[in-house]
Length: 365
Image (tube, rainbow, N blue to C red; front, side, top):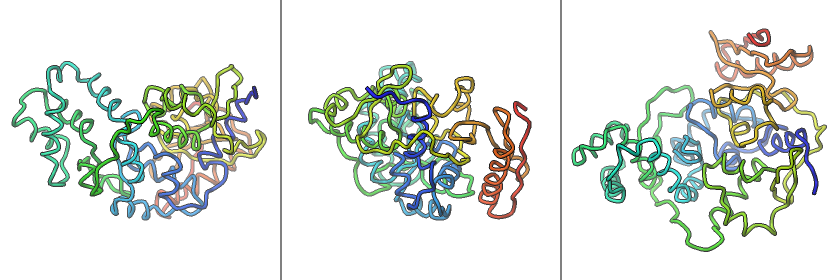
């Protein structure tokens, strides 16, 4: 069985994640290819697409949200993702049990004895008018007839029982706005696809194909870490003849699509600035293909990474209009130059041309 080294996996990830070469595709096609983009920090997807697309206009992304071609909602791992409307409708039912389970794990005591089917009907009735509501407003409407559980538990379980989107202006370019919820069916004018009772889990198979196209080669544990589902064993079993199998250097079994790109490990990788919680890093249980073990805890803290030769070599942030880069190791002269050049472009993008300032700090500072 072919063994893929860390560098080979890195280049495959960069190619699948549109980070090896700028992609000539519109924003909705990129969001679809990437299986959605993690978006609990509303402005981060703009940087993610800017880093991946040859010509990205942030106003287009805002227009797509306002036009309801893209939506923001809880899905993979019960985190907020930016998704195409088509994927939101196709995938939401497949994630229903996981979404409920994750809320119940946090609010089990508060929700003990609550009839969730009855509560789901109440949520549907409360949101049938299509009016955006804050989570607190929705919880207060439900609490008129249900004094228990508390408002936070009601608000959280409501978004798991009934598919909800976060309505604009939240998520629009350079806009700050709170969360206002609308039922997905009201927002898009159609119901999510129902669960499929067929054997072989065809919905799960479709999810596996999409994941591998954007993240492969990957282990089933990586798939679980990305979607939050229980590994999709029935789907993977049904796909045995369809997938190719590799091993990594530690002997893990990796799955992939036969014709998916797996570039030469020596393919040059340009400097790339990633947003917080980018799935190029978070989309795996084993993240060593893109980040050193010493820094494995940084992704979940919201660190934004700079990829150097395809790996997380620095973090970055904003301070007084400047892009501030903090290396995770000592940079060679050519690396500093490349980081400064790309950082200037990012500063101009984020400030809409008002700043091009970049500051590179000393490693570890």
